[in-house]
Length: 303
Image: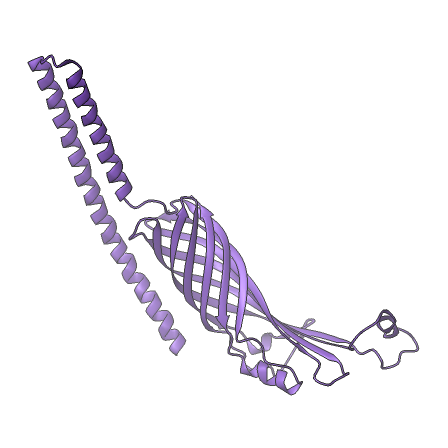
């Protein structure tokens, strides 16, 4: 229920922000119209001044030319100052790049099993890397796609001289994103968005003899096999649906390159009957929920 509330609130904020952006766009258009009017008046004043100079036919020689050049330089500088004060430096067409994620893991069901076979629990956080891209479709809306993957591993030899055990969990996802973008400051942006997609969870189990030699490797397949080489490998996996509402900021270091930070809530849903091992269904798997707050750092390039 808490996750549903978070998602509803994010979508509600997204709607309010979209409406605010429309009003912001209208105000910006009015400001542009006023600016154009001022520019027209300046051109008119300049034309009147030129006519006055022609009608009076004042012969001022080089001094008048110098004043005229200074006036032109001042007008050009004023135009450049006005242009530089407008929002610029952010992507207007599209961009793509690299993403780095961090998410806390709350998977007690797996950690309890690791403890029973003598291994340490998984790391508290999983780090994932990936990439993505998007393009603008108008009115500050852009669509695209992203994907990422990462893993955590627990390895050890619980008994001295015994077998080494290793359990690895791999988490990956990908999907379509839609974002609403705002540019309140120069060279920067604030955006709200949602990703809809899916992912896969793999849990791999391994056990092997300590200090394995070349001869021990082959002895496991020999017809005179003895139990001096023990190796086991198994793996299970399942697919899941995911929804990821996010809010983020991005700053353009250059016109074509930007860095950003993002925070969201990764909501996952999967079927308990979906766990498979080499095509065979695995029953009795506990409810392992990966839903949690997720953070993302990214470097994007575009124009």
